[in-house]
Image: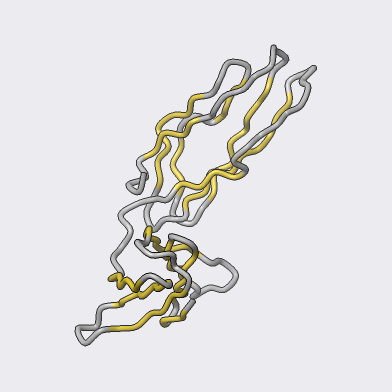
Amino acid sequence: MDLLGDRLIVGSYEVLEEFDVSDPSHLLRSGWDQTRTYAMGAGAGVNGAGDSLYVVADWEGIAIYEAQPDPGGDIEIHPTRLDFGTVTAARDSIVEVRNSGAGPLTVSFVTSPSGISVAPTAFTVAAGDTQEVVVTATPTERVRGEIRYFSDDPDL
């Protein structure tokens, strides 16, 4: 990892991430990119034209990336798996939909399997913010399936 002004650059597996650390109590992932190399190490610097450059390297090579603004949100769902166990009465669980991008993230609709309901089913999350979603299981046969969030995340 490397620090360039108020930006922390981190290489992790096949992802290069940039975090805004200007407010240490509220770290914000301000950008990321998939890397061609296994990002074992990361560095940052500025070229002669004043452009921020990020470098990642592994045992097979080195790659250089130029920092560019992220055009929109990056959706993150936590937790990624729910297990309600045996449901004898309606039971709720909270899922957090996080936007780790630099722009707003709009979830236009959410689908869920029969026996599971979700609220809200459409919302917008500001950059760096989180929307709580209530997932409710009702008594029914065994339910197995996916909850899908349809968004305008340009990285998907």
